[in-house]
Image 1 (cartoon, one colour):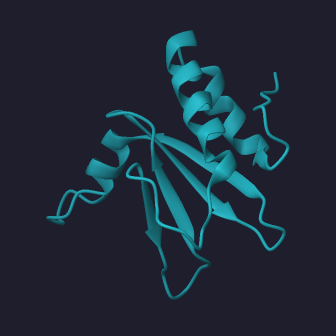
Image 2: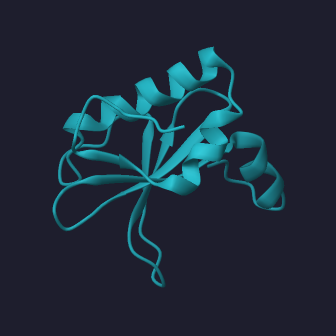
Length: 105
């Protein structure tokens, strides 16, 4: 199964599809709607309130999209200004991985 968002600027990498497949139809619609909302995302402009930017020293800059209280999407903007959706996961996963840190992502 493949998923298409309205914009040709946004690409959902194949490794995200299994995660989309297990979502309920309502969850999938919310996730794809949030992804589609990135169509006008400008990495040089102010960030939308549901997007966080990360600039680690050892890997390229990436962004975290807060879909809703449960779901998160990691994306990056390539050199052609295209958005690549690379990961989909639950907030619980982040909470588990970083349970010893005080800051919530």
